Image (cartoon, rainbow, N blue to C red; front, side, top):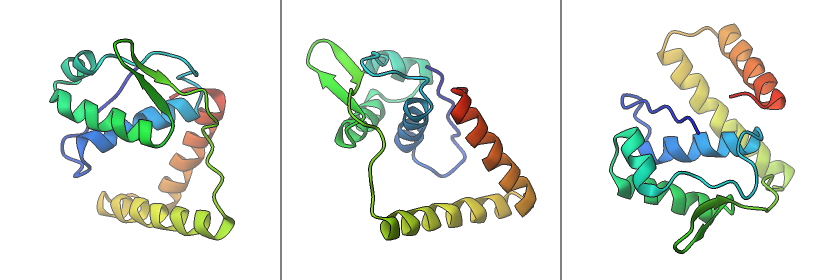
Length: 131
């Protein structure tokens, strides 16, 4: 499981871990019942505080994406990973997310066409099961 952290992004490290694991589950890279790295193992690999990993894993468990089994580890849940959300609520959430993406992309100097192409590429990669 590859996780890349950006310590300069302004996004909390635990959130970066959550988002990358969510992506890996959604893309099929991580399968149900697959064991995630131990808290200490992932913390050591990423050179971060173990409490940060705990926070990320607890957030993923709260979302129903993983199950923490005492003494055994953390496993990808067997549940349905796609949460059905009313159309209006889904549209509102996606609008907020796209505004953040556009603001950050603009701050970095990206043109709208470049951002659209990157999103299209990410969709293709997710469908193909690549990260």
